[in-house]
Image: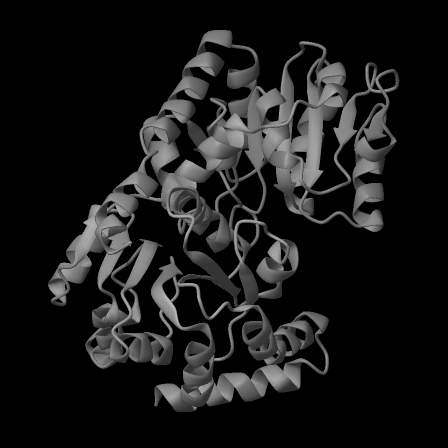
Length: 407
C-alpha cells in the first residue's frame, strides 16, 4: 500500500512538473543526484548523512552538523533535501561535503542511493519518516536517528489503522524528541529508545544571535526610537499593523515582507503614510527621517530583529506563522495572528507571557497600546520571551553526548 502511494505521488509530481517550475526543478535534481554521488563521494571517507526536507529542517539540523564537523573532522557530511526551497538556497553550504536532492522513496532508487552514498550513520530531521529508506538502513545496520522530531496523537502512528506504518519508527536506533508528550506517545506504542532533547532550532537561533550582523543603515533609521519590526509579513498582516502605525508616527516601522516582489513592495509603499525608504536604496542620510524602512532583499531579517522593541511574525492569517524564536531570542515580545496552534514554541511563548496572539485590528490595537506606552510592561514581556529561548538551549549537546560513542 505504501509503495503504491509513493508511485502515485511520483506520477503526480511528473504531471505537476509540466505546470510548476518548482516541481520540475525538484525532479531534475533527483535525477542528477546519482551523478553527484558518483563523482563527489570519496570512497576512502566515512560519511554521516543528514536529511532535511526543506530549509526549516536544515536550520534545525545545522547545529548538530557543524558541531560534528568541528569535533570529528575526519568524517564527511552528506546533506540531502527533498524540496527545492531547501536545496536551491543551501546547495553551496560549506558545512557539508556533498549536497544533493533525495530521490523518491522507491525501493530501487533507495538501494541505488545507499549503494553510492554508503553512509555510516544517518540523521533524519523532524518530520522525515520515509519507510523504504528507513527499512533499508535498518537492514544494512546503519545507525539511524530522528532529530528534533515531535509527535501528536492525531498522527497516523497512533491510530488503530496505522499499526503497519508505525513499524517504521522501530527502524530508528534512537529518537531525540522535542517534548515529553512525544516520548509518552512513542512509549505507548512500544518505542522506548527515546530521549527528550528539545529542539535544536533554539541552539541555531542562539548561534544566529551571536553572529548577528551590525547594520549601520538600520541603526541610523532607528535613532534610538521605539521600533516595530514585522518579519515575513503577508498582505493581511500588513493591512492591520500599517493601519495602526499610520496613527502613531512617533514609532519607527521596519517591514520585511515574506514575498519580495515589486507589486507587493509597491502596495506596502502606498499604504504607509509618511516617508518609506527601501533598504537597497537607503543611505545613512535618507533613512534618518524615514517613517518606514522596507526590507527588499533576503538574508537580513534574523539580524534586523535585534533593532526592534516589538516583533511581529507574519503568516498568522494564512497557513501558519513563521519563525517566532528567531525574534524572541533578542528579548523582545512577539505578536502574531490566530493561526499558531501547530507551533509548540508559539504556544509556549504565549504561556510564559512573552508572546501574544490577536484576531483582528481592534485586539492588535489594545496589545500595541499596552506595549508601546507602558515601558515596564514592554521590558517585562521582552525579558520573558528571551528567557524562554535561553532555557531551551542545549539540545545539540544532549544528542552529541548520546551518539559520541559511535563516532
